[in-house]
Amino acid sequence: MIEKISKGLSLNKQKEQTVLEILPHEDENSKLLRLKRGSWESQKEPWLVYDEKGKLHALLSIETLSKMIEHFKNAEKETLFLKLEKSILQHLPLDFHDVWTVAMEEIKKSKKSDMDFDALIKKIKTEHPNLFLDLKDLYLPEGASVISTIER
Image 1: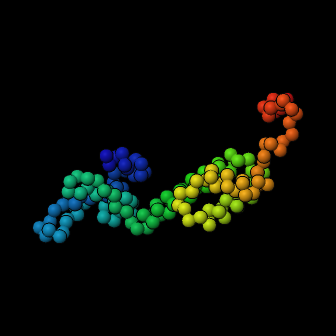
Image 2: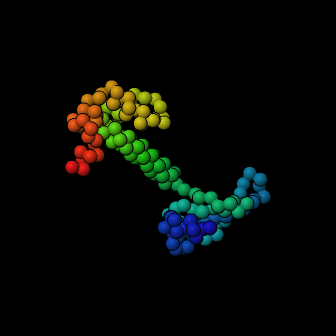
Image 3: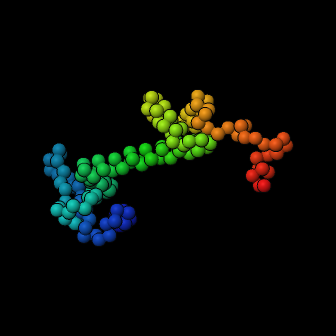
């Protein structure tokens, strides 16, 4: 199990990895930490800790944990931006940036944590139809379809 985790964490050398074990102690309010492998001075994270039941835990510094949380927040924000971008593009904006700006203002006003971007863009399209292409406004000869006109 440790070897599998080590590969995912780029800790290929077992010497680099600190592995600890929690052992019982005479005092019921205390436990003993025993170094199984690695070094107490190791700066490589995470340190791996086996509890008394053999369950594996990871020990991280607050700095590393804070960076991880920030990374997850940024990834979540990027995912939301990609979903918003997709919703905007599906509604044929004339100027993507203008629609994006209006959408961001609406999102800031909203107190919702889980925004339905398709509904938001439909609302913006209703309130600001000039920001979107309306296929009905395209001139097509009677009996012609968009596909047959494009194929020509």
